Amino acid sequence: METEKIERINALARAKKERLLTPEEEAERKALHAEYLAGFRSNMEQVLQNVRIQEKDGSLTPLQKKADKR
Image (tube, rainbow, N blue to C red):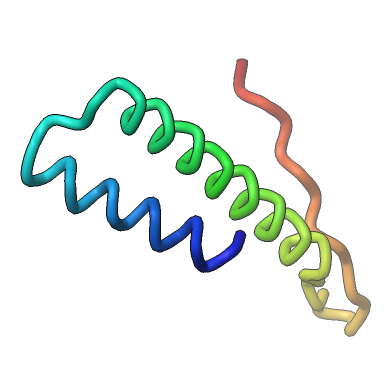
């Protein structure tokens, strides 16, 4: 995510602490926050895909994704 968007998220967060946000600002904040979270989750997924567990015999096993609890 670009630094300008992160700065805008922070500016909106500071404004929200001081006053009520307008509906347009609130919608922008929610959209930027959702974009930030999607990028974070995508990055974390990539990191976890590269993690390997070293077994006692020395072999490397990739992490397995847990099943949903639904």
